[in-house]
Length: 328
Image 1 (cartoon, rainbow, N blue to C red):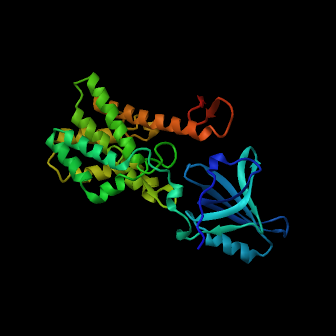
Image 2 (cartoon, rainbow, N blue to C red):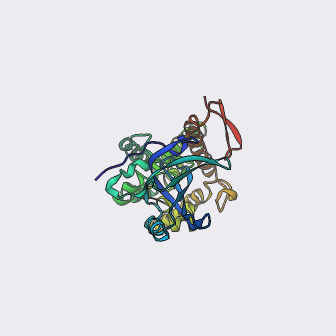
Image 3 (cartoon, one colour):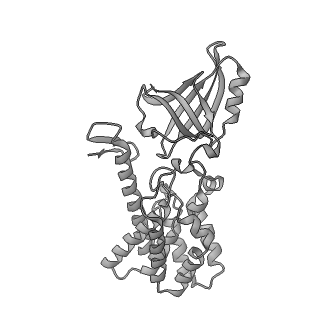
């Protein structure tokens, strides 16, 4: 059975380019006739490891059952081999296929699923060692016991160590969640060197747990996507649900419990960004800013790498950040 490799990322596609490549279906759109009896078409939104998306249209024959059978064989997360042409429509690139060119649903054995998830930036085994080192550095027995109950759980650790940190914006690669978590810890440790009144144990614990809800918010199939519960609740609420269940089984001091819960609730800093409460204790302020710094630096560096092939200019406008970013 023929096996297919990814040739071009969506971000590198050019107007007028003929392609024979594989993509993941992000959204199935519509099936409809076109051109007064000319035929039937369907529309999909495709994605790949870059996290970017591109519209796709398959222009089929007048044989409705044939085109509809192909459309119905496609589902969200299907991996497709597509022969077609990249074209610019209303200043956006699209891909179109006209029969007899191919739109083919691939079987799992016909592609490597890791082609659609970015590889780790840091060595995963080394990151796990650092995670254990951070847990061992905690001197507060109640906080250390909580961390051990979470991260010595093999089921949680095996998922946590390879999980992505997001769908697209930052750390959207294998091991991205663990990398982001350790970055937040390290920034908090640095802040502690400037201000010894901070509770380092609380910051380490809050940092290691702050994004744990992403284990339930995101899932990895042939792509990174939000779960139904993740879409309905978000990772902050998912993390609080997990944490309170663990804390209810512990004898941790109530004041310490409340501070830890507050850190998770407030780690996005502002209600506009999804935090039910804004930071009210110094450790929560540090974790919010550490989280923001880790995420923003990863976002900008990835934007630069992804955009270098899109222009020869020195700058590219980032709509998300509402500013030009220097590329080179």
